[in-house]
Image 1: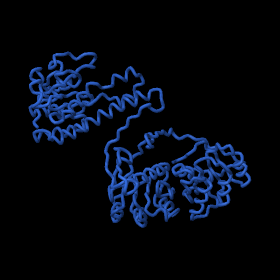
Image 2: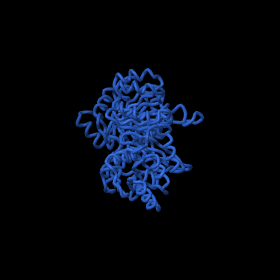
Image 3: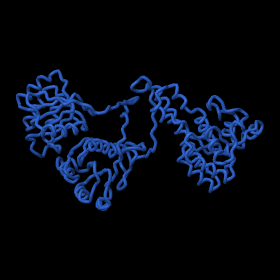
Image 4: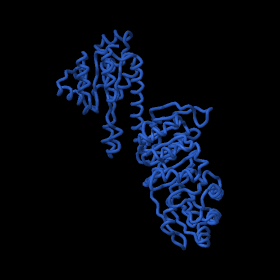
Length: 496
């Protein structure tokens, strides 16, 4: 399709002069108005003012510019069907629309006055985009400056193909949908913690081989964070790989020291810090080497060749880290199916989970807690350090969760149990090291002294828990009787 008339109306004017100049050189007539027209005129690019073409002045501080039958007729008119109507009313066809919208999403976080914010709700822009997209068989619509190179390439070929115009139309409708969603969510959220009506959009959808199991279908959506990443080596990331990596990376990011986290079925089976990443990884793996088989590994430093060699000794599904040295990649590539993924910066957002008929949404505020020793005996510095380590890991294990730890590694993890005392027994059973002098963390309060008594019998000398049970006094008395130090945090860490 050859293109001969373009309408340019943009808020973000980056690259628009260059695009208009290119269009002019290819023989286009350009329609424009407002700030875009002023910019083109200042650059010496000839154009026709929209108001001159429509015979209707721009008015209401720019609220009404392109909302006119001669504009929308030129966009919506079907070539070969509506030609006579267009000719009777002096409507010329518009072949290309270049529009981007008022920055409502950006300004909604900056402008507190609703009266001011509504001025950033674009009306004419979405109308132009939607009209052009509806008539994609005859009109090409550019709704993002990132698409400008597509115009240049199309001009070289003599125009956009039907398939390309359809792709642009889909992108255009997605843009206006996201724009309307942002406006709706903001307005419905005024005076509320969560909007009464929540509209969501995720892009970059990729079909996965299957879902949690081979008989299920699955896909991943997202452009940022872990959801936006794919493996740089190995097999395609699976549904379960993404889930496990999300869990592993969340825990690895808790540590400023070199840290390694090993996750299996969405639970940590080993976590450790060390003087080096290699030391941390070995400690984490050896905490539960059986469970480490077929696991996902997250690291918070660059992987070097020594660590890559150590990782290669075990069957691992995924290795993720902020960076990999060239030598480490050469070693890891010998494991052809091993997925390697570069961890992006964390992407914080509300957590969304589906349930029958709807979704659950939750938001985690900045982490604040006040540790309070509630026993007669104060915790020693090393016990405090071990409790802090255990507490971080416990917050990332499925409830009910009990974690035994030293100052630098997990010693035993019991997670996802219906009974808290059973979780403690499992953690003890799975431990491959002595628990003498260890610290233990519980993700929720201890309803009875039994879990503490089991932990003490295994050798733990300190325990950290949220507190808040009606039997706290009984648990504290048991700790004093057993000479354990106990800390209440006031924060619960259920993970379902």
